[in-house]
Image 1 (cartoon, rainbow, N blue to C red):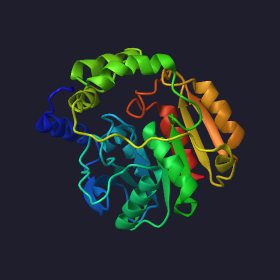
Image 2: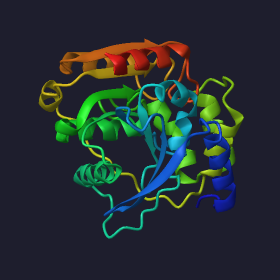
Image 3: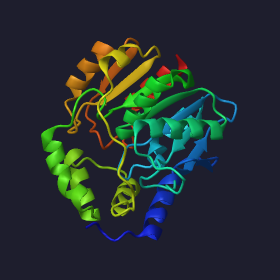
Image 4: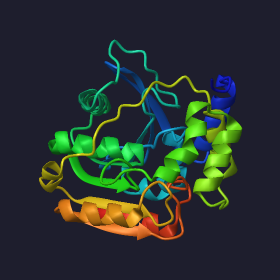
Length: 285
């Protein structure tokens, strides 16, 4: 049993975080066979598109607030709320997201609806897992790929992380969400509005996320596009250096960097200057 979902409280918390975006932010809803996808847009309309996918849980597209000002100087940022996860997208289409094939079809429809033929694509955590699978299946639509502390792509979760997350997953409540985040981030100061958004997402009527095995090594060796892999040095989610080693062994055009003193769930809102610098350089290259 989860906490009673307070829709008004969640939307108010969402809007408070999204208010940290630049004033020129726009929002659109894009119809897809899987439901309406809500996208926050920012940056010059004629700039190259950058599609951002958030992590799971209560991340939402709003969580990119700490990077969007810098990224929107040279890119048309398109930050997506995942269908079936907390956010403003709705899983009310004729089809349900159940497989990686469905995720591919959903992103095809989303890019088509946004008028995007080819984009730079990236994501955090679960969003990075989606982005990597899409780049492997639809490389003609992805110019560059960036993966921000990706989960399930190159190595598994730590057992201690799964055990710590289990109470929150079985019965999500605001208190359990806060306790879990305090543990994973080491108690470092986090944006209070972002924290409130995570708490109010407890009990959100989400659907089971699509999952699957890690991408095959042969497929990863054939990924012929620039890839930026930014890893959280203090992540409790997985072994950071195991991820770096495994990714480096299979990705032919990857740049990998470990961001020290930041945890998995503190990204991307913690926004260390190094993250913004590396990502901006990568997109300009």
